[in-house]
Length: 215
Ligand SMILES: Nc1c(NC[C@H](O)[C@H](O)[C@H](O)CO)[nH]c(=O)[nH]c1=O
Ligand SMILES: CC(=O)[C@@H](O)COP(=O)(O)O
Image (tube, rainbow, N blue to C red; front, side):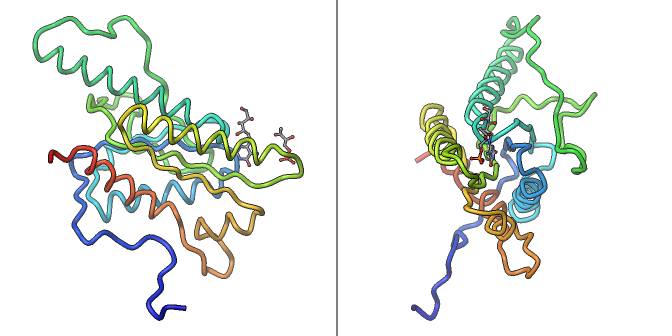
């Protein structure tokens, strides 16, 4: 074993300034207590380590992990249409989405902190999302359900990213039991686990900056 071996994500050597970014987190309501820990870890890291503005982190929920790719794709597309609409407004043109009801109430897991943005009366940003983080927890049961969902979700999330050109972070734990999931959300009793949401927050900022980079 190497003396300096470090399992996990090595931090980037360059500063990753997320102050100009807008990030979408889509999370599941399956295994919600564990998921909430991961969402909190991602959000805190983006705000505290990368200066992402709290109002530029939008959080939406879906039932289960299987729904994550669809929601990521749909919400990403809506944000891109809104951005185009904003640009159109600036040029004095007619809104592309006038008359269409494309807004949805921002949802949270019961017992979680209030949403950071998008609440009633909040002014909706028209910046398209620079990255998406899909967060969920799959725990193996006694049927083949786990295997099918794991395969579909990982392929689906990758497809949304490659098709859209916007990075989509695979924040889905695929665990053989609950202990594995708790540990990877930093919620294990021994306190030895690592909250992977922290890495996903940093990863989203790094990949969003890479997407926006002009070479
Ligand atoms: N077993 C888990 C699921 N299953 C539900 C599916 O993701 C999906 O919502 C359903 O099949 C309807 O399309 N979801 C998780 O997020 N975690 C699990 O452990
Ligand atoms: C289809 C289901 O949600 C469920 O019956 C799967 O069962 P298991 O998690 O034990 O494989």
